[in-house]
Image 1 (cartoon, rainbow, N blue to C red):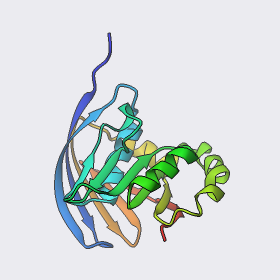
Image 2 (image 1 turned 90 degrees about the vertical axis):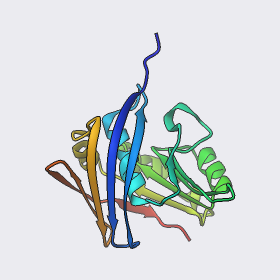
Image 3 (image 1 turned 120 degrees about the vertical axis):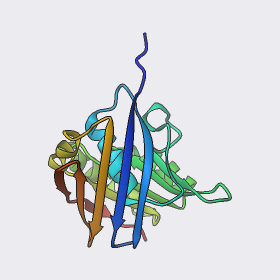
Length: 181
């Protein structure tokens, strides 16, 4: 018998001083049975780091032709494609062809730098691609706070990220491996 997704209700408040974006998003997020708490929290963090009124969670892990998060323009074009993990060069190429901007949040401890070393030279032609690494210790700390009903506050200033869930505060240091443009 197939397992069903677990539903998480998240009140996500974002204060992004770098982009002057201040908003609260009430999200209902389905956690796929094969998804870890760390990956779920990375999806929420990626949402916060790119928060916009038209940003949406997608089917993500359960489909190959959609990113984890996307933002579409009012006319239906893909403005932003956000993927998590260590995608192949083919998937990166396809994503960069479909969307105006693509951000990959990679994770995986020691595997991520090896993946990036192997794929880095193949991504130089994509001016619309950003690659950001999230350290294992940060992701592990976030994963330990996953809760089916969360009030999550994310403050961003000068690239530094502070995540507060209940009375717990975690500082996340995203490493930008490739910037767009």
